[in-house]
Length: 307
Ligand SMILES: [Zn+2]
Ligand SMILES: [Zn+2]
Image (cartoon, rainbow, N blue to C red; front, side):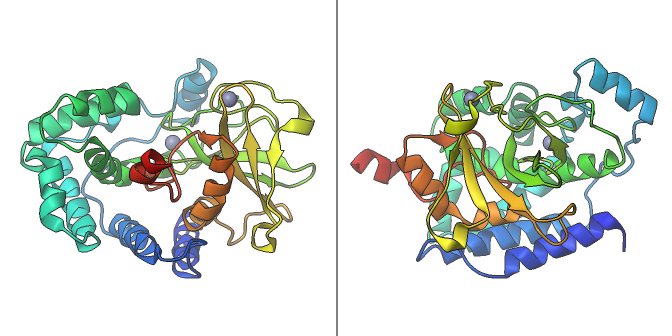
């Protein structure tokens, strides 16, 4: 087995083991598991795309460009239609009301040209411009469409990271992903002195980043104010780095030794929304969604409005 497929295998095991740290949300974990499984199926395209040479890769990085051009990530209409259909099918299995799910999509799932346009907005401009665009489409639930699109694009993102897996990204000093430009979902501290690594919420690539700087706004936080911990022994290796500038936080796991082994911080992130809630209650918010495109742990919009 290659190192990459071994990592996917141990990630799958991590996802299947244990449960969420919040009562009564086990079906969310079931949804994450099914989405993970979806990405293990055979590819729908993109595998013919050429890998960069090391020289081309280093040139792009040194000029501040991500390894993959966002435009290159936009799938063709047929590919996207298949992937969107699969994600809606999975989501439908985990929805109490699948008719409501389709009504949230407002027919977008059949309008592949428009879907592709929306995917392009997301890939080239980002999540906020996509949300703004969706808000203007009558009948659409923006959060549902964004979740579906994100997960429909997951496999192309993972494939992009595989194509770039051998590139040395140590010269990259930015807070966003050197492969695809995505924001980090989580961090981990490993090796001598606890060097910090980030994991992209989109393509799940790993890269090194300064220990005390906020990856979302670049602010250098003073050592003494930057961390929140929990007393709960279940979270003994987990902390949140908080930013006094942009009020965002990133969860970080302390890894013993010099190797991740079978540890998967990006999967542990999915299983610890209760920790997110505790940090959110301190007045901070996540800087990026988890690897399934979900922003928050347990506080739904309705609950936030009621509060
Ligand atoms: Zn990425
Ligand atoms: Zn910040």
